[in-house]
Each structure stands twice: as structure tokens, then as C-alpha cells.
Image 1 (cartoon, rainbow, N blue to C red):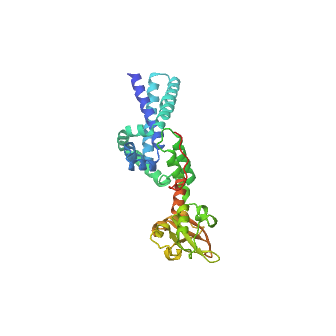
Image 2: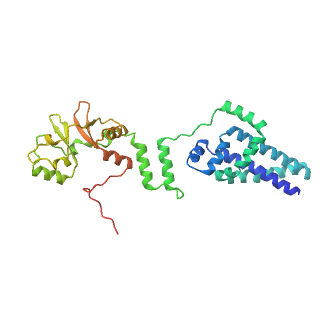
Image 3: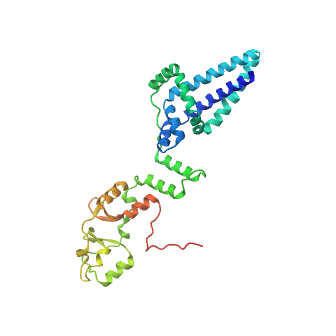
Amino acid sequence: MQYLIVVLLLALSALFSGLTLGYMGLDVHALKRKARLGNKEARLILPIREKGNQLLTTLLLGNVAVNAVLAIFLGSIASGVLAGLIATALIFVFGEIVPQAVISRHAMRFGAQFAAFIRILMRVSWPITFPIGYILDKVLGAEIQTFYTKRELMEIISEHEDALESTVDQDEERIVHGALQFSQKTTGNIMTPRREVQLLHPNEVLDDELRRRITEEGYSRYPIVEGDPERVTGILYTKDIILAENTATVREVAEHKHLRVRPNDMLDTVLAYMLKRRQHMAIVTDEVGTFIGVITLEDIIEEVIQQEILDEDDEVEPSLA
């Protein structure tokens, strides 16, 4: 019977010690996030973990009380020095090291399993633990939420992608990385410069030769430029030349309303502007309005997904069977 009592007290000591580390190692804000996502264990733990200082006081009170009773009980069945050595060894190994090592690795599972027991214990010890917890709350304030920089978030995603237990795949990692870096880049970082843009002059006639050229180049939009320095006066949509007469000029068919942006405009702002104006291309101009390049919705999307979008006119390397 005496040994059974020792085992029971030691088990309680282990439970309080392990749960102290387990519960307090769980972040309240992470638990709230998991609970919102439907995690049942988080929903069981959250109500008691939100009362952080009262919970800590309850667990420490239980641990100290059990260890004191264990030392006294061992002292009644053995000599003082021997009882002290036995109590120290048992509490050190089985009451502290082992439970903390185990429960800290499975804090959610153990925390959920013993949540009801701890709630009862917090109510029973309320006259002692609540005032202490209340004072600590007022002195220390609310628990500080952990925030991560964009680089830290990217590293976390990479770690998840590398882990076998994670469901994050390589494509998702790439897209998240692109999205997190997207708002830090400007139009000038990804625009197609003027020297690489296929242009049309407003006085060009949409004859068979020009139509053939447009068909061969495969672009859906052509900026219309004139003057020195060059300024864009409109955009020709290739779909509009289908119904145009062969004697019509580019000026007559082109759409003269177009979106203008600056090279230092942030990409997220440009994207929002494009979506609002329902424009797939924007003309990039410098401070004096000179045409220096173009940026398309496709360019921005490619920057987000970190991968080139291939259309029917792009050459694709054949796959190996």
C-alpha cells in the first residue's frame, strides 16, 4: 500500500510538472488560430490556456504540494537522509525529466486529455490561484503575440516544404515566396523596356502585309507611338483589326484610352489599378511622360507565381517519355 501511494504521488508530480511545460509552451494566439480552423484539441485547451497566470499558479501549486507530501511520506517510511535522497532522485527523474521530455513533445494531445481535470483543479484552487494570477496579469500585462518578418515566413514555408510530414508542396512554396516579395517590387523591376517592345505608328495602314506581320509576331496588343521623344497615343488590340478595312489606319482602329504608370510605382498598387480599370497592359513613362516600357497583367502574375506563363505561341520543350 505504501509503495502504491508513492507511485500515485509520483504520477501526480510528473503530471503537474509535464503539463506546466506543455501548457505554457503552447502559444495562445496559435491555439486561437487552430481553434478557428476546427482543431478539437485546441478548442479544449484554449479556455484554460487563456488564463495563463492562473493556470501556471494552479499547476505549480499542485506540483509543490504533491512533492512536499511525497517527501513527508517517504520520511515516514525511511530515515531522514535516505528519504531525502530517494525523494530527490524519484522526483528528479520520474517527476521532472521524463514527463517534461514526453509531454513537451506531445503538448496538444496531453493538454486536451487532461483539460477537464485541470479545469476542475482551477476551480477548486480558485481562492488561492485566482488572486495571484490576477496580480500577475496586471503587473506583466497580456501575453505578447509572436510576429514574423516576411523573410522568416518564407523560411518557415521552406521548412514545411522540406518536411515529410507537411502538406506544403514545391509549387505552393514558390507561389507563397513570390506573393510575399511581390509588394516590395516596382514596375521598373519587371517592365519590358522600350527597346524590346513591338510598336506601331498611327499612320500605318492595316493592309495585308501589316496584318501578316501582326499575325506572325503573335502579340495581342501594340502600343501606338509618335513624336520625339516618343509618346504613346493609344493601343491597338489585334482582335479589333479583324473587322477593320484594309484601307483603315492604325490611328482609326486603336483604342486611345490607356493606363499609364511610373517605373517606381509598387506592383501591388499597379495590379489594383489594372483590375479596377480592367486593363491588361499599362504604359510606363518617366517623369516627363516619355515612353520607356510596358507592363502587363501577365508580367505581374508571373512575378507572383515565380514562373513564366506560356501561351500557345511560346515554344515548349518536349517532355521525355
